[in-house]
Length: 372
Ligand code: FES
Ligand code: FE
Image (cartoon, rainbow, N blue to C red; front, side, top):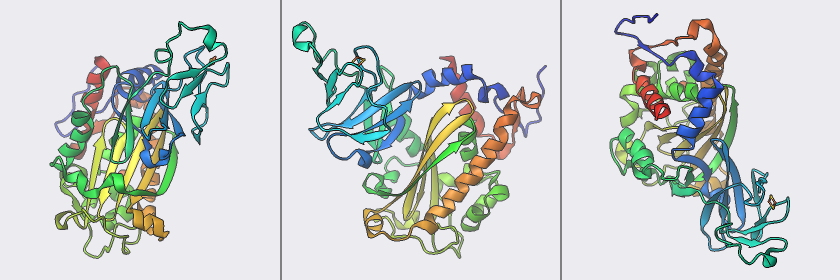
């Protein structure tokens, strides 16, 4: 039985999209392993030998900086019998990565450089039996990887998403995001499906109810239409707000490239499937989502300031606290929904009101990807 909806309402996805491990498995292969995925802040892997490991879809990926200064990404799988090469989330090695099982040893460029009895096996091609490389791009100071054999265009799917939102290809360059430093990083363990988090970021119907501090600074957000109509071209700060801070107090040093027309404004961008970027004159808030299971998502949020601000050790807490509260408020709301995604009431899903109708395009995007 299909429920006929009045024109004001559009259907959401059915509840099982948020709970079913089979849907999550399909998302792993057709979304997270198929698209560009922001995995690490490049500055965190800044010297030869430094590495990080991250899960992308069902794979573990190792990012390591080579002796030549180049950052590379490989599947974190030993070519011998499949042991996970690195189990640490981050670390530093000297010249090589050695498998702890039978000691196959790989150079930081991925080539097989040593193994017990390797000289007695002259027919082994050391490049062919090296680590399997993963496509890697650097943008906004982040390393983005793609596990697809032929990745989608980075320019269209990642840079294009930001340009479409801001209405200008080069506008994001004003924030010089790659030159900023991490002033604070907070990792949130959210007991909710990744799509609930994206959908929440896409709408502002909830802002008046759950974000009192944010709506103080951005009064347009008290009207539920903000996400749809204002954010792309900048939501104005309240007249009495001196900065984008929890109490409206003054912010930090303005990023020098930010122009007059972008001053005292807030911009928000979603890059499917797992990145949210918020731009304000003195900082950038960069969220990376790592879907862990159908009902669990790790969100890593970086607050980025100019190098001078971070090096000076100035207090960024009023600035961080505003969006930290927003995050906690949003993630609580998502966690409130998650258990009810399996309720009989939600078997056919819920509804989107007009100020949320644009979320239907996200659902169309997702279902078309899952159908491929
Ligand atoms: Fe890695 Fe054997 S599995 S050396
Ligand atoms: Fe919110």
